[in-house]
Image 1 (cartoon, rainbow, N blue to C red):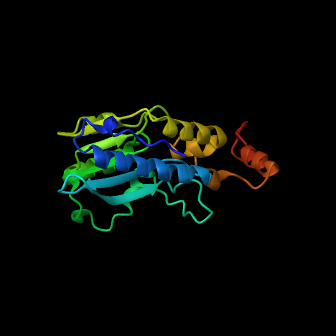
Image 2: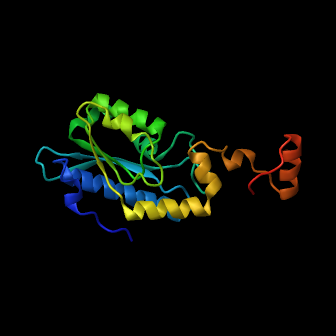
Image 3: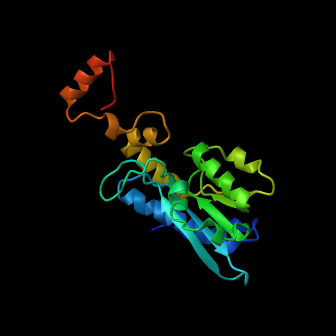
Length: 207
């Protein structure tokens, strides 16, 4: 089970309740993804309502890119953040100035650009649960006018990523663009793998 997050972790925002809820939702969804053998990265957006005491969940989503199968589409742009944003039907219906977006891992350049777009709609508060496993491009977010970022070193997030990277190194490397996705290049047998390597004039591969 994931540990609950202290409210004081988010006190810098003034939107601590929404930040806490968004981060816990994202970490919970990431854990579900990890238990299913998928990449444990997720995002969530939560809006603090005008009463200052209740919140509205805008979206929650996880990395659905690699690997495909078991009911998951392998949607090509579904990282944790973009997977969450695809679940929003009407962006104009959200008061982004009162919303906190939480991601379990420092966002890549694609997801950073998505969050920059939300900044244009009014988003000013982002939580990054951890950046140890992947540094991302958070410096681009930090440079945005009025943007507030709370960066945690969440042990659950770090453990999930470390476990996945050790068990599925190819899938992790593929997700950050270091190698092609296994499904697009992995032959059905070792003999077929060597034959493919010889055709390509290569001498080594990770199997």
